[in-house]
Image (cartoon, rainbow, N blue to C red; front, side):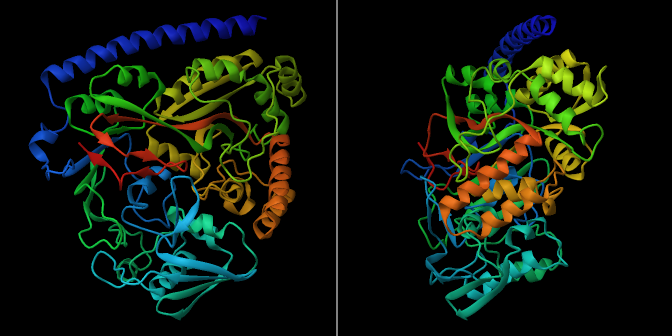
Length: 534
């Protein structure tokens, strides 16, 4: 009873502080609008040109954080991939607005047998420097990611590819070592982007710094910590974009990002925090964009770190968290509670999976059985995001009820990712944006023993039975049987209390009212190719 009362007052205090912050935020935006410019005194009105048909020269996107790199074979975040995927780079296949797999650089394909996929390529496509796109380019791209000397983190996504066989200039086969059902879903994600062979030759074994693909935008420049600039590909083989130029500006402070919508200095500001929704909705120049994602937010345990290598400790924490209070307190009832690390739109989502229920007595019993009757002290890592910080504070107060003292460490996004990937953590708040819409991307990257670290398994989770189930599901061609295998794997992972699911990801952005046809895919990629600026 004492712990419940304490939590109630803590949430009330957080709500009061939030109202004070929001009042200050509104005053801040009014000051910005009335008297100053936020970005080197350059406004869209003076910088951009109109072409007379409702389109405008430059689309400016104000983003919270910079990319970690521009190489699809080394990227560890959707945040980075969103800049180049479908814009600079394209794959053999893609997902349409309904998340169905559709042709792109491959005009058609067929599965010759269980281990052979044949792709028939588009004719007349060139890379940005004029180099022809052909079967050799496909071969060189995938041989690069699989080159053990390169050491690309994304190599594991294609480890089943035994050979890329060129039949002629426009026909290529993927010869697999074993059946692999999710192949098309991975080829549709940023990992499947086809790279100019000349770029591969230029950078050899290094990370690519100047991306060159077949997409509707060409790469101009990247000034780390400031901006990435793309230009319209004047020789694009497909439907050309309506805008001439895109500038991804790094603007860490959210109030500044949102004010840039109001002052006309940006067309899109993302991500948008839940607590800024009302501010944008009541503004004269902005709208709120919302859509459900493939992934979820969760509390992760580093299972190689004491005392989180003990399943009883992990279960105790899972039972000590009152998730409904968190959805209300940290997320203001936006989005819904997760029961796994997959959103409901992902193939393989287990609707009947049960997360741990709030049970403080059971939590105390488990902690005592683990030898921590008086609790312990630990560090919780989070990125510098308002909701995550609020979530961390609520977890801090809830776990105090079983004697666990959490020290919250807030890190800049890039530093946070790097530290978690290295395993320099105990507990961490993170999200996983499934890039393919298939459970394999979630299960293999997050839970397979071979994926520890930057590949995705920052839980450093290992379970032989789960490894086997994941491998069987990859090879299984019967989709119903795949669902059964993934369901069993998820049940074991939950029994191992490898993580605490929090909330299904909801994509949020502030969008200027004169911008049409912007969207964020369920995987989390910004979709800008069809944007109109009126």
